Image (cartoon, rainbow, N blue to C red):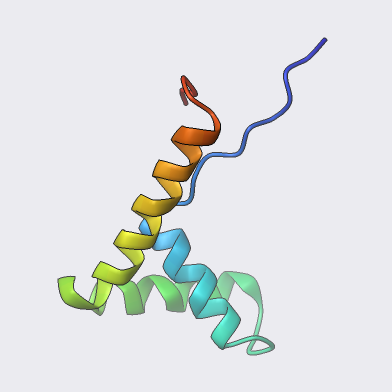
Length: 72
């Protein structure tokens, strides 16, 4: 039997991009939204990025506990 697909945990940019897209729902197509999110992310300070980095770390920890030994 095949092993089920295990999704990788989100990184800090993907956590940010998800929040960015949620806040701007209906404001254009995904590629443009991603491009804008990237520009905003690159302009953010370390302090502004910190909440997304912390959330990504929580997701990594939860993922490790749920799937010990998972490697990608």
